[in-house]
Image (tube, rainbow, N blue to C red; front, side, top):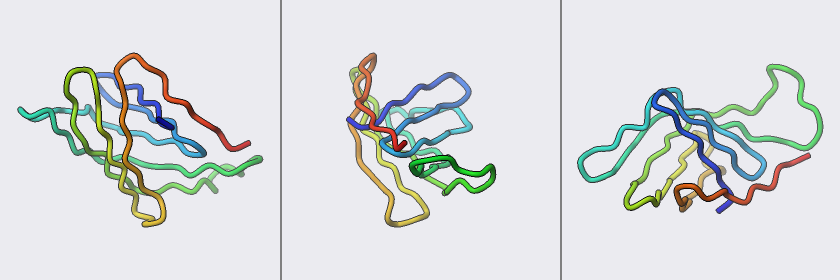
Length: 99
């Protein structure tokens, strides 16, 4: 899966391989279970990073939730970084962090 999403009624945090993201609003679903929200995406690099020197990009998180499963599309302002993911409610994604 290479992604983990933790959502509350106010926001969500995401963990990716060598990256993380934040959605600062509720993920509201339309009548078909679709969503499209703005957030941020931070590319991580191995080793320490000085404060203020993170690689932060604006991102769009969109997809569909049905029957405990989520399809997630990640579109980042940096065209090199994007992905399509499948998540299952209650299952942990396998994440590889850059250290």
